[in-house]
Amino acid sequence: MKKILVACGAGVVTSTAAMNKLQEELTARGVDETKYKLGQSSVAEVQSLADQYDMAITTTQYDNDEIKIPVINGLPLLTNIGAEKVIDEVIANLD
Image (cartoon, rainbow, N blue to C red; front, side, top):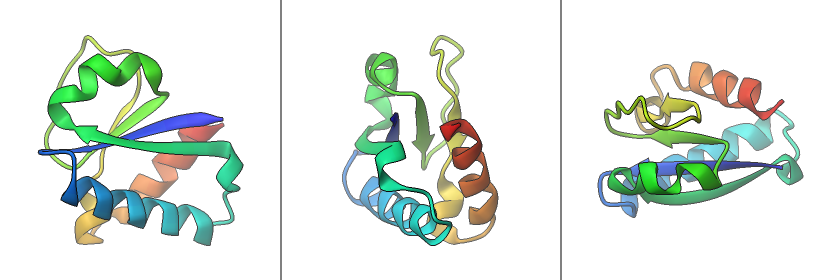
């Protein structure tokens, strides 16, 4: 099971919306919910939590070369512009 961290500025409202959209889209594509587990945080916490997750999705700009997991720009999950590409990238990282 892969663990996915969804992060936004404060770690509450926007990450919840992105997480709900991500789960909805993964289910629509037939991805079994036993393949992944979602968590959420603020962007400021991503670095300290990275070793507990397999990938991070952030709704704000995030650049940190020190963490070893893929970081995916999740803003399209909120705007629906380019959301399919984000879902494709998440699914690719689930395998």
